Length: 143
Figure 1 (cartoon, rainbow, N blue to C red):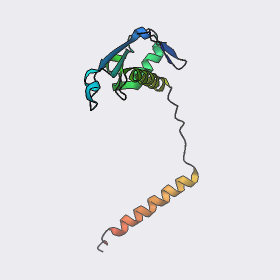
Figure 2 (figure 1 turned 45 degrees about the vertical axis):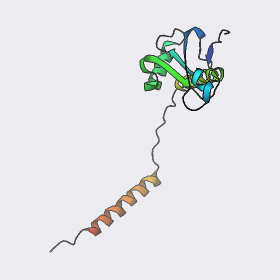
Figure 3 (figure 1 turned 180 degrees about the vertical axis):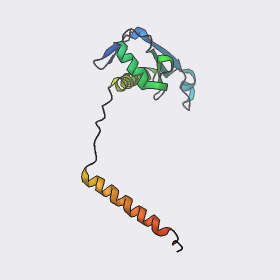
Figure 4 (figure 1 turned 90 degrees about the vertical axis):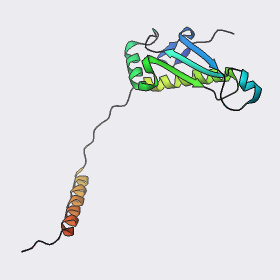
């Protein structure tokens, strides 16, 4: 088999092929003789926590964003969509890159807003109407 190319994660960093761990199993489900003997399901694992190719501050953010998706800092992608191991490998590489690009993206800062005067007036008016409705439901006071 020819050597695999590295996986580029946007412009952020590149994962060398030597850091990737592949595992192949037979796919489940129907498929006859081919499915029973061919190992077409591809499982791609990458040790994010121990990888020297990721900058430290980026590694921390990615591990935090992935949470339970990467237990122990190891990200695993499993694909069994096609009958071809070669196509499943390509899909797994693409999915790994998409997951990492999404996790590396900085979250937008929330800009707090303040309600305007009309919104405050409407809210207080609704509160007054609701309080009046509840007061009218009560039995009349005995004098």
